[in-house]
Image (tube, rainbow, N blue to C red; front, side, top):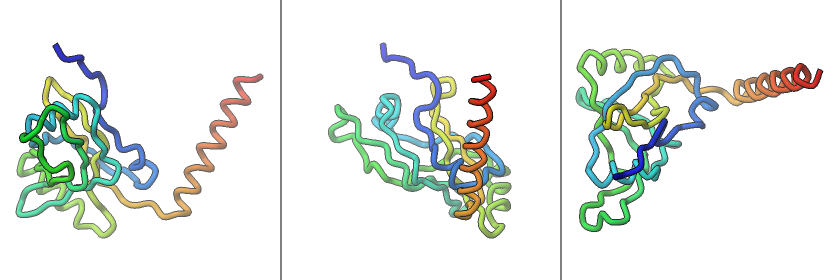
Length: 152
């Protein structure tokens, strides 16, 4: 029996650094069998991926899932568009949210929920360079304070 994977299959660590996360939603994802096997082995990268709404459907693009080693002819393109599974009212709400200038949909993590692969999708607004520097300085000062309290 395959080893059970606890926690996230893939996370987008860069997202919280590059974006302000406004709202999150859980979505299913349409995958092929070999993609699921590859995901369970942890062979995915969602760092540069994003989602788009086209014709009332949500697709995630630029998500790299490496081909499964024993997949041979059943393997698909690692960077293909993958459909996200959401209810119509959820899609309409996301569409309304990203109509605002500067907002986009980004996947935060891939994980298993009762044997099904799920995507945590976020409505996010991009940070400016000075915002990123400010966030780094804040984290650094908090780290120093914690260390000083711990040492005393």
